[in-house]
Length: 282
Length: 306
Image (cartoon, rainbow over all chains, first blue to last red):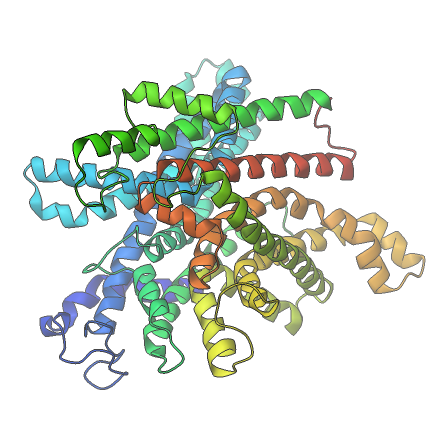
């Protein structure tokens, strides 16, 4: 329950935060590396930007990427898993063979290459299609698509397992015997029973996507300035660590923000999984 | 058994083929080429350069030429690191990454199992709750947060350990801990859950009734059963360690294969990239195979290849 509260707080802060702060804060302050003070509650960073603003903006973008990426992976994975599980037989084993092969490819590496290759193409096509305003956000689209594309494997496996176990139950047999069509069975019987598992793993996929995005931003391939994301903020902070003067606020505030959000999400997902798991007894 | 291994090897070949093809064409899709940072060369020199790295000719010809070279075990030359073939670079860099990965692996597995078993045996006590909270924390923070935090505390404030680099035994400690931490946490949670389930089984009751001490019951008997989910996680663990090492090597400036990987993408160094990705995939598949064989041997009820 506390997790839910934290999440709601973070979400609200993320959505309305950057618009609440006066626009002046978004502009560069005169001095860089200011420690936390009245004017800049979180301090300023290398270029003098207010860190509180950047953390909130980062919250917006990280959460957006996380949820959208998880949604994409959910869409692909659920469809794939349902088809494989429902059709069964050799189609199923071939589809799962493909999943196994894709599993063997190291994800981060594949993401690196994919994003580096697709980003320029997307920018060019956006500019050519007459949407220059969106070019700056192309990275977000790419990240959402690519992260979702690499996360769907787990979801597909789980959904397929669930469909297989549901398929063998009697109510499905009963539905077939009265002549219900396949698509109706899927829609009316399987889907409602799948929602529980799907929501649990959706909640657990979001922190995984946010973590992956932060790794990519750290390596320089993800979100870039002037946009912010928690991964980018943390990587900026990590790069200015030196023995002479430690800028602790650059590392601590984004870390607290990101850590508590992910912690809350994991907590929530765990709680949901425990609640839905029929094997757990008090 | 032989058929099982043979099927896996076939799968490995398919994976390698897909991966090589994908990286080959994706690198060429990216804007820019491997020789962009040089000044403009006269035409005949440029042609000779391209010919040396076999980057001339129609693209399909290049592709099949590359496949042919791979079958001979020749990973070609790196376009960025002149006069070094990819084989040489990997021969230098891989042992470093392998050492780091192996130490992190051992740390993660042993640490995770110990903490998980402790938490399970003292369920609901403060040991359990604090261990699981710490585990959730380690999973929620990325390694490039834990790493610099550890550096701040141990290397800068306390001055106990080196900030980075490679060579001494001390420089192994922080990177290995950073790399292992989230996976140790995951294994701890996994062990705790499966240990809790194992402790409800009848053979534990029998062991206790026979008068065995609690630690004997847990570590000699229940652990063997509880460990199975952890064993099946070892395959994905190796994969995660491989990818996680990229970031950790960056943080601690360790001369391993991860740095070359990122740089090869940035420098459009196609052969080095392919070489590293191939090695990673081979290692992964072989490791997964070994894990599956061990799993089948540990639990006779599982029939892998009946």
